[in-house]
Length: 350
Image 1: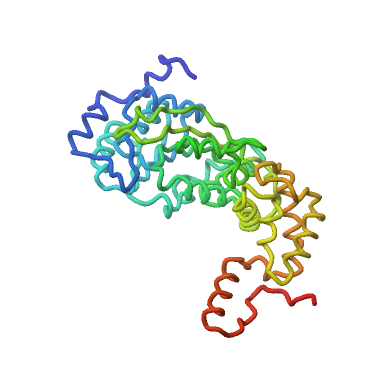
Image 2 (image 1 turned 60 degrees about the horizontal axis):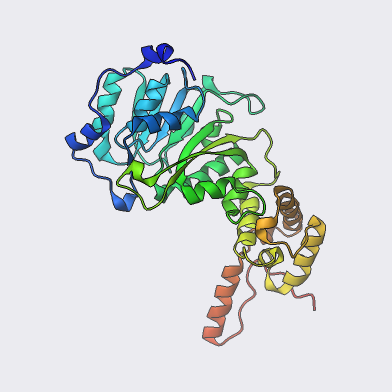
């Protein structure tokens, strides 16, 4: 980290504290939006340091709220900070910050789940995917309710090099519930190993930076919070489309306490389930009695490759969902008549 003297030129002028802004604008954290404010600037500075050097960087901050983390980002020397805030109550306080840092803080009133970040920054900051990451960072103290769907969306963007990743291997520094942070970084065989572990680690280098105790937030959440840093890999560890990988991983982990072949079975229609499951496990050379938590990423890669092979021969497999087959069977039983053969169901081999 640069010496504080070197950062002095970046320091914001005297402003009301974040706590004073909350009182000034009568701001309350909305429980239904899972909002929790982080008022301690030492902690927000510590989060920002995990992103690496922000000198002259472009930064997108997700859900800045009253602006505590925003101040730390600006003070770290970022040249261009774009904040995306859904809640109108926080806009006046953010405008105050923007006026104190002329030309360096842009405010977008919108939803990060739909905001087009690929239009938010100049093309000139782009770096080739094979090169180093661009001088662009995504940083956010995420509301718990949005954190998992948002990281899944960004992981899909990484796989497809879309959204904030049109600029290159954009790095992310984000907060999650401690349990979710532990899942992201869980190693093979650990009890926290989950769908999120595989999806994050096959696409990124993932680092669990540190834990913030719940008491540091206002209001105090019932859980502690983990800060996680992601750097997209030059080559993903699984070379298959994101939707296919996600489907294989999701199906396998739905029976996390059972042998992995149980989840693999549900990738196939009932009529050909047993034969194709056995063939897929053999093709992938994976022991069918392993638990999902014990599978390595290379083993998931082998399973995804094997499933892709079947999908090439029968494209309807990719859209097959076993729950839909169950639903149709249930409806047929209710009507007390034979069920029409569902889409994607292979004819019986008998």
